Image (cartoon, rainbow, N blue to C red):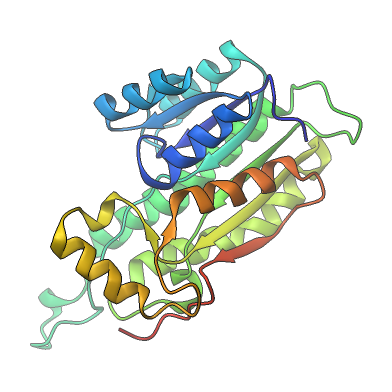
Length: 258
């Protein structure tokens, strides 16, 4: 699939995996809408890559449509990459055995709402916009890449909400691809392992913590780079024969219970 002279929406595009993907797409001649909630950082990234910024809560239909329309205003929308998401760590039950100390249900709902429902919200609206594109020689009109996590398969203690949400993203991949195949749009999913993003902070303590995490990776024994994720995302977008796949990028790690 040709990326040059098309547009893309990248959610969570102001930092981490999303920022690396937005920059990689721009380097391939794509006009990128950086969709995020961090206005300052989002505008900065968008300006640097010659794209546009859209303040976007992925659970908001109106805000997602606005981001898509901003992309279409620059060039036909052929790519959508979902990197927006949140994490949460809480055990299902508390140590005291009281109902009140069980996992907060509203926090569980929030993680599902953003990571799973938000991802699907972007998918359904982006695919709708792509359906209006003039198809290429393969009858293709666009492609979607979603971000899950190895936690979808190797969920650790305290990751019930997060793993549920990411498992849902993996689970929707095949039926989503089947749903949108008639309009010529592909859908794939990436399950990243331990990737070095701003979530780990900076400084000596952060470096020490990341080194300990990296020691548990099969090979190479380090955290992944956001650019490595972005490279795979671009391959899934541009390779026309990649469809309905969920691919781990984790250097062979299998997460232990804790």
